[in-house]
Image (cartoon, rainbow, N blue to C red; front, side, top):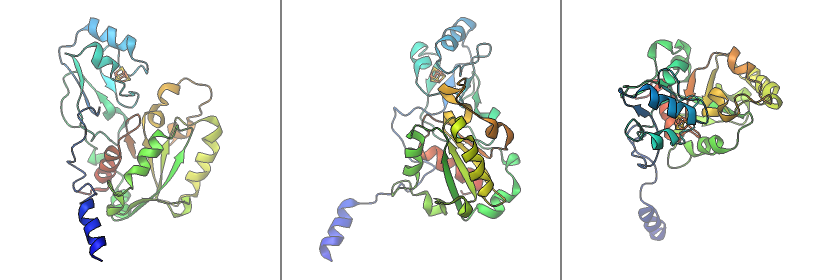
Length: 251
Ligand code: SF4
């Protein structure tokens, strides 16, 4: 008994107490800030080097739904582009993922665009089925971590379940390959109404580095309403959990 208590004491508190304010490594790359005075020549340089065409060649904005957070643009223009370690970047409107020059405010979900049934039905319990639609296992690992003893999203009743019939929605990772298109649709159809769709990671949101590949079939994404976009390559568990907390109205 005393031995177990000693072990417990030596382990200390393992869970993240406040998922809203938990500090992360300074090296983590989250919400970017682009200087308001970035000029056309500088925009041309970074938009040409971006491997994912995430930088608009006219405006100099960065699309977080395409960005792989590789940091190449910030290295090329250290005085003009930097990545903060703000991990609260999940949103419910695709256009809100675009960061313009001069923007240095938190990225937040739009309350007006949350379907009313989501908070009514799922704010106390949300069961999710994960579909890896051509994923590379990076986002999938981070989703696993979201439920571990540290991040413990289960404290809010948010869990992954084995069957879509027991789920309230699906979390899609990967760029959605042709081979997974039908399986994704079947899984979605098996989830009872009302149901939600979450895109986790750059590949799911835009196709990522594979976006022009003929091996993709993104019809499902184009034809369905998306309730939450969680950017990152892969996304951080805190980005995923905070996005869900915002969506469900958890303070
Ligand atoms: S960090 Fe994003 S925007 Fe910058 S070069 Fe990499 S992919 Fe492009």
